[in-house]
Image (cartoon, rainbow, N blue to C red; front, side):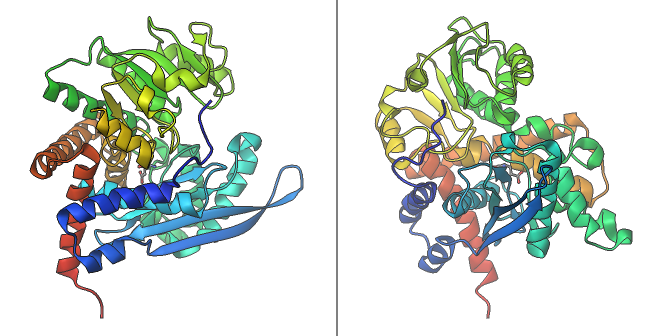
Length: 425
Ligand code: GLU
């Protein structure tokens, strides 16, 4: 079972620690450091919804806007019981680093609703999503703060959000607001390939890593935590590159087959099994505590934060960890992995394919265009290759680890922006 408890440091402690490490190394301007150490806006809304059962329930939603020095706030919304102000602040801060590193004209935000969506019907989820959007009001906007999917949120939910927001504006201006949310279904203004963009990006980063090492992904064995949108598409593209999936862990079970697990078969099975991989017939179920210690070349955490900690980092056998999730490794886990010489392709680079594709969707809507999937995947490859090589150069320049190098590249861009903008008044 995936660890959903907060062990050790909080997500916000983790991101602050990562930032401070980079800030020290580059001797970041002290004023800019103060600004970036706190989110700009922290919005908490409590809103009522009348459920199908007739019961009125009050939900708590969050939207934290960390920084917008480079452009509009950008980042996903997750529906999960672990979302709270600390998690939203941490995830919003990671978005600031991610969008800056990717070279996008965005800042960072994140939020969500504290709930387990599996407990609600589709019609309840629609009402909850629409009422949350209404409660946020003009705290979001196509040129101000642009939500997107994250853990447990779908393209359908993004369509409901965008529709609700647009419905609060004058009908003759509706189309002006379509880019208020990204990750929508294709027919509702979404981008071809947005669904697979994060997984595609994870594998693009691993391809670059393999190229640098002079090895091939073909034949490499990997373990995957999380079989949601990011996990499945990562597995899909890993298979395309000949890598072998040997274990998968989700919230319900941990399954293992050293001869390989077919991601498409597992997806069909899990769809029919209430989105759970439990009892999948073509693999053995093992104790979840064994997952990170399984023999493999690559480990891909693509679920929740704080999964690799002091308690399991020493067991990891992979040569490289590709962070499909946000914040899967905590401070102590990170240090253990660095000391053991295990490379970590950090979240703000590794899973940035999602927000890069969101940027393409935003441009598509803003300019009334329709991008093809070929254009989208090519665009992702170009942007990710560029970010990857900039991080690598910083790693050599500062003789540091991958994560700190990624932060350095990202934070330096924002520092320059502040120097140019100055501080009002
Ligand atoms: N939720 C994704 C992330 O954490 C995507 C955010 C977006 O597209 O705005 O990067």
